Amino acid sequence: MAELRGRVIASRKELVGAIMLGVVAGVVASFAERVDATLTGGKYTPLGYVNTYVWILVAATLFGPLAPVITTEIQAFIGLLTFANPLSWLWPIVNFVFAVAAGLVSMALQKFNPSAKLITRVALMSLALAILDIPMVYVVVVMVLGLPFIVYLLSLPVYMLLQLIPTTLVAYAVIKAILRSGVLRRVKG
Image 1: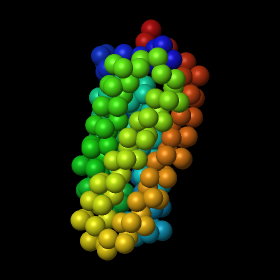
Image 2: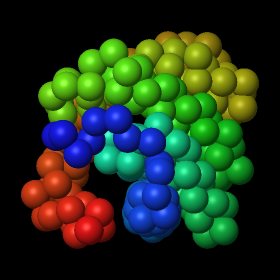
Image 3: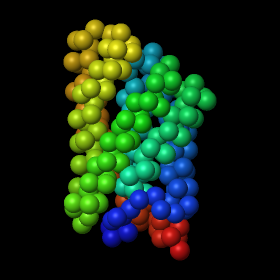
Image 4: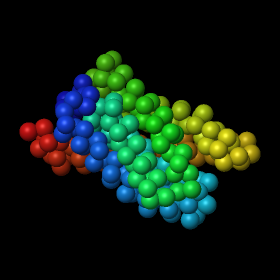
């Protein structure tokens, strides 16, 4: 965990790591968002949502506050190129807001509690993103899709639970797997 403290994208290798996470996220999103679009017509995106926010948490944890922006914007660009979802045009904007929030929480943790356990770091970033769902789900559901307010009220708990449970757990598992693999030690050397 010591290698994760005080991180800001400071080296080319860390920048490349964030870019690689964005490519992985984009490839997975191309499939996940197509499944979402097939099942819901693009009006509900649970698989794409979990995929995006897992990689935001992973990037912020492993590579610092700027990494989630790099990762999510590359993913969104791949989604635009592959027309992964009817709302692909919107995801660069929405995901940027979430990535900045994760980056800010990452910076706050680095400054005020650099010795926080990995699960605490991931859970606090995920909680911040779940709270950010309150206005952002409204923007997507009501303002962009034009659906009734009741749909927003029904969708909000679903997206918050997706953020707090599967996204947090999957991100934690991915981070642990990456750390166990030793890839980051080899990158640093």
